[in-house]
Length: 329
Image (tube, rainbow, N blue to C red):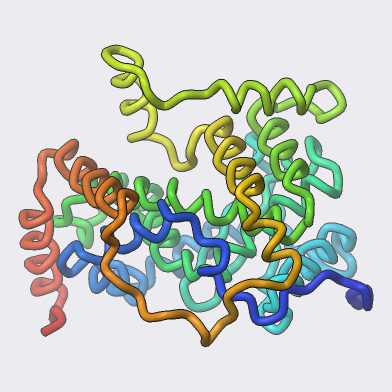
């Protein structure tokens, strides 16, 4: 099935055009952890990505021209919009009662949708979710994202290869990064759909588990406007504990962050064709702003929550690489 000629396209757009400051800062903080990238790549090279892929697709249905072609076309359209039409991953649907989607595969990504998601969302919501997953591919999130899923799904089984790795510390740090990365992908979903309210509606529906016609988007947006991450004492402690175990930011926070970005004028500027293109990105600099300091502290706090320091984690990662037959120089 061919894409419609009039399909919306952001030609040559760089993922840094819509990258949330939290994503940029958390990524920079994570990359400063000694040997972490080497350990992540080693886990993937040892075949654990392949094992995760087999587990994901073995009980799933690959969508295409003869399997839910409407959803498959939406999937192709969102990659076309991000100017990735020649890099469209395979799309799978799996039976699961919790509405969600995820992308795995550092070298050859795949996108997996849970079946409940199709029951709850209309085409606008489905497009928003698929665009969010496409942004993970576009933004090169899949390396860390795949490592996080390997640690969550396989690390807990106590396999010998994971012996000596500070699993809890790495998991908490990757979760901190992933929650920040999600904010970038929400922005991309708004750009791809050209409808920020469709992204907000999909977040509302996936949060409540009820069909959109049974919920009020205006009320949910008002709820997001009231959401405050400040506070003290028990309130702040409760939010910290919740955050440490969550793979995604609170939905109301995501809505607030997205709408604040739209109101800033950046959304309209990009839709109007004024955006950073691939190959034109300025050199990356050390994060010196408040977001950089904040997320450096958050990554450090994640390690401390596991009883580790960044230096201790680096030593353990180096020793693990030595046992696996070589670390970087």
